[in-house]
Length: 344
Image (cartoon, rainbow, N blue to C red):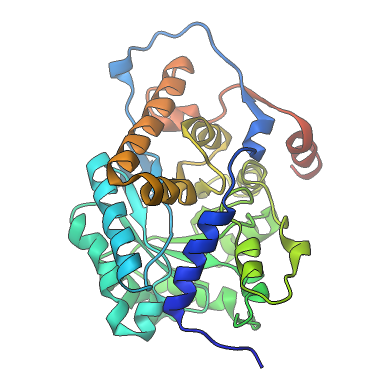
């Protein structure tokens, strides 16, 4: 029999193991090189980070991706500080899965704190694909969210000792939520990436927003294996690298409101994702590590540095706005080159 643990304790374990396992020295983005341009006609003051994501108007293409909530005071403090940083730097933010608060009202404050600290910001709610329409609406109402992320985490559930095993109604539940919710619905992976086949299945049920959340960031295969007595370590490197996943989705669903996350370490990686077709890019584990290890002020400085990096690339590539980066000259090398030329 599988031993059950509280959702709150599971959330805290996820944070602990994610911080320990999140290594960013090497990334699939290293297999993509932007072609430097020596001539530009722009002035630094011409550069504007404001971007459109479907019906959402974002002050920056960078957003804080889903991390936590539902783990008591510890996760409330993390979400509070993330919200303060998002407000000070003008970026959007997603909370972690709110199912814990739907199951236990006492955990709602660990999510509500985000809207309290950032009353005018763009905030994404978050639930898994097991959610009903009613639960999705409750998650949105809980934090007055501007959009809802529905995360797909089949591999994590299969490795998780207490995880789900039945996904028969995944697509029908997503379709119902997309059709009935009054805010945009973003379908996101949690670290294994989106294939072009999965993107088309989502398109067929009415999805317009996809966050590829590819391999390269926080690895929930490794996180969940840390929680198992007998790890299923053969899945530790399963998934689609983020830049390859962006290309996969964009190749079959070019009108998609595409977001990129998964191993984005800096503004350079973020700009690469915009060149490949994403309209915004999310960071999670690397920002959480700065917050936990160095504090709120350091996190604000890190976000500002990422903005500067993106702006520098925009100026060199003669792009006044983030969307103008799309398709700028670049090359692929190594495994990334092989993947794209076999799949796209």
